[in-house]
Length: 306
Image (cartoon, rainbow, N blue to C red; front, side):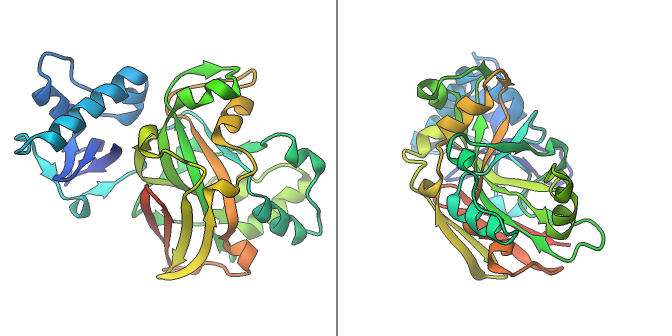
């Protein structure tokens, strides 16, 4: 099941269900198909706050649409004629990890550094800016005078249940689904400000793209074996596999929730896959470049540099 946040015409953004007939308005579809049950929320964050009940009901709506000999009499929107936002418009938290050894080794070597032993002991992360979330098709505006504009190819998990001190063997129960993440980076600003010893916030907090959809966890039987690719203006720049990560999402969830409460809609990024950014390749983006990130089973996240 794929869920999106979409906008048709001048209407406000709302939750949608991706079907073989087009995108169905989730709240409207649930009301018309199951009138005896309260309609589902028209916002995916509010849907996730219903936890398993909300996702199960959305799945029931999807199954009715797909299994009916004739599609139910709903309005279906052409995915090519609507605007797609980040699946979660306003996540409460955006945690970005650092779990691909090739990326870590290459980027640290460019600064004359080795990988510290502690990197192998626990999955570190930084807190991103959840107020700078962008979606599919959005124009990405880098900070003024930034000359090393970069993308980062990442896999992300969206939390579906409130939890704290979550054990690794239970962490899968807290995963609502997966999406693609582009952790845009202003490398010149990042290099300058991180000399102080904190960061990389200032080099990151202008934009993070998520999308094009939230794919429910049951649709991704093996999240540790998905091909990841990045293309710039149609040319492949990056290729990797989700299984190359040193830590699983379950381990990331367990570590992030130690003494901290995770909430539905929180986003955890995997970190950049090996070769998954221009910094590793000594190639940077120019105004007008179109960047496509693709992960097997999820789709393509496309953006253009301003």
